[in-house]
Image 1: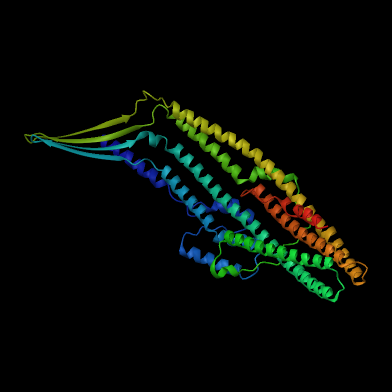
Image 2 (image 1 turned 90 degrees about the vertical axis):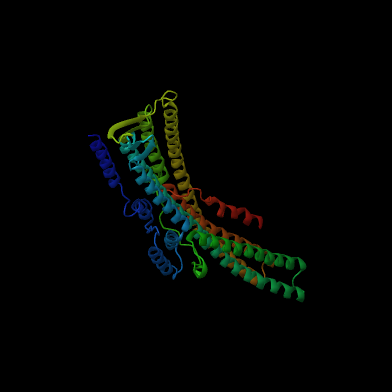
Length: 472
């Protein structure tokens, strides 16, 4: 009967072990659902040479054309090794789920004692009854942890996408600005050479010559700064999309995308953020998992070790008589000094801490969504204002100033002053357009998840205004 009991327990244990298995996609379906679908991009965990080669071919195809923000994001999802490391963590989390879903291994012990012609051999197999009894609860908690890991992997995917978009818009704007300043510096160079010739002919005084030369010198310095920024932003994009070697020759467009005709509405941004932000969902699952852990700890506070053992003993007397004895052993801890109060208190505090963090995060998510939307709408209005008002008026002023200079109605200083203002306005317009696309990216991050600590959109065009005023 005892042997039947032990065999039955072992068979049940083996059956439970057989129920736990790894998923075919290793948890990536949730990543695709929470990150790939909103981004409209493919998410792939590279776990073999074949998958890596296929991703490499896809990247090469995308690199044949000038990058857009979308193609840059797709390349990053294929190529960013930090993101692939996050997917590896997801694989580790699934392994932990499987491990937690299995019953504790049975413990075998064998002993053999001989002396005075007597021989005693004992075999024992022990199973943790408490572990088997709490297996469903532990498996449920492990499943919640695995789902948390899936959301973390999806959030990491969104973060890489956000970082790539920011790097892309920064790089294209820097290239656009460097191109514009190259043209402006070329014009300043021609004006400087003309000023030198006029000075040698005695038709331009020293003051105007110096003004012309300092304008050229300033343009040279600004162009050098712009080219340095172009290089640094491009390298930041390279790091985001994970390129190296011959792939570094990828092409970028010469200017940012045009502003959209319509803007987002403010009504749904905050509500969407509360419903869809992945870090908030992770916090909710943390609360649920800790609640289950708290309940399990509370239920097992008095007995956390209960083992049953099947014992078979074979005894041989000095006279040669043999006997076999079988029995059952029970092993458990007596809570004399700790009735589980410390574990229960710790679990309770951990649960309440998670609840407080969830409430705080919900408040922050709502605030971040509102802040991101207001920055988005403000940057759109500023960029649109530069496109519709400032740049057209600046062109009219430039044309009229040039006409008056050619008619000798104004001096060269007025022409240079107008050129400085035109350069400042165009620079501010480029930065305003860049800030809009950065703000648009930040709104997506505030609603879906990822990195919400983006550059303040107000740092570009708004900062250019005092600079322009300083030259007036």
